[in-house]
Length: 206
Ligand SMILES: Nc1ncnc2c1ncn2[C@@H]1O[C@H](COP(=O)(O)OP(=O)(O)OP(=O)(O)O)[C@@H](O)[C@H]1O
Ligand SMILES: [Mg+2]
Image (cartoon, rainbow, N blue to C red; front, side, top):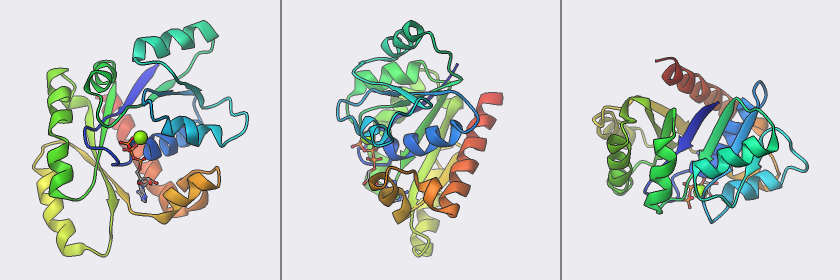
């Protein structure tokens, strides 16, 4: 089972939204388990809106990856991917998840404060030896801000991590309210989630 972890020490950067979209996309071809390690329970909330969904399945109310894996083993179901959502500020939970990760995804938004806010996440990733398995995920890119985007791109590229890109799309927010994913209601969102999945496979093949 491959473990994909969304980790960020700045809150509200899109971890739960993208974990949900990615897991639902992956479940078209694979057996997927979500682990919601955030007491806020946003991923659980999105998942529960889909009635009786077996794939992806979800484990909640566990405060670490070991607990999630134990729950999976007890259930007797094999899964290809474990996709983990973490809280934006609880460092021990983030560290525990990163330590078990095959791929770490760090969503960041386009502002200096957002980049600075991720310093602690980068420290965790380095100290857990996961730098080479990390993808930066530039989220909520506003296509209209071309000049600003150029400057942010330079800053983000300077971090020295491979980078995925997700646009600002109302479909991501709207889909949740309709018990859907962004990719299910918007072709362009589907394209960028597919691209993200390919980038993750690239990291897994290294
Ligand atoms: N690409 C996007 N386009 C539009 N809205 C987005 C996008 N990504 C995330 N959002 C919106 O941004 C808000 C924050 O997203 P989300 O809750 O997924 O972040 P988070 O990192 O999980 O936050 P927290 O740190 O609180 O757990 C939500 O309202 C979500 O719908
Ligand atoms: Mg969240």
